[in-house]
Amino acid sequence: MISIVYLFIILIGLVIIIAIVWRFASRRLTIPCPVWMSGLLDTPFSKDMSGRTQKTIQRLDLRSGMNVLDAGCGPGRLTIPVAQKVGSEGEVTAIDIQEGMLHEAQQRAYKAHLTNIRFLLSGPGEGKLDRNHFDRAVLVTVLGEIPDREAALREIFDVLKPGGILLVEETILDPHYQTRSTVTRLAGAAGLIEKEFFGNSFSYTLTLEKPSGAGV
Image (cartoon, rainbow, N blue to C red; front, top):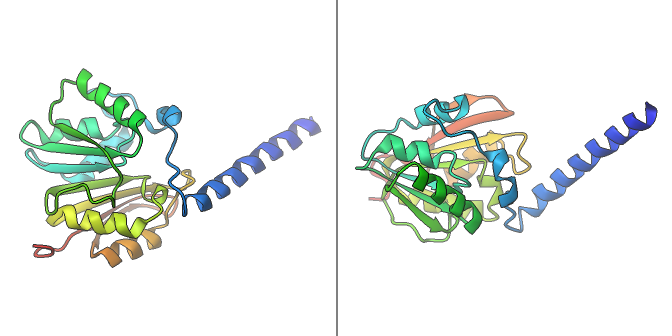
């Protein structure tokens, strides 16, 4: 029994060490969640969305015809329901730095018969997006994976329309977790203003607004 307890403690310690090393390494290197772990990012796609996804959609306040940026889209957990919400008159631009993630999202879009999604192999901050184009943008447990977070948020500010909203989600379970104070500091430096906060210090959603008249 004692040996099992020791083994459990050692395993927990290894997990903590790996998470710490991963976290600090991601400040200098791009270390996204591997494609083979995409199932951990995912929820079943159905008419009744998971509670987490449904809350995110509600907080985005989406309307038909909107243009939305899904930055670090992964396997498309949000991409698909967002594209359904904005309808054929709107468009979702889904970007990711991993071809494997984009491929999974593309396959799901095909199965859902969606043609209003543009897929782009890119990360935020690479300058591949049009200025003043998007009504909404999302960064769901992605910001900490980006070595140059300042450049990423500056580009998101530039590509949002005046009055546009960036939604950021973070959870302490993510090794790239970013605190609320860090996100608001970086976003504020880019010109974004905090609008709403949901959750707590361990798991939260933050919406940030590009001021009306900015970047016109």
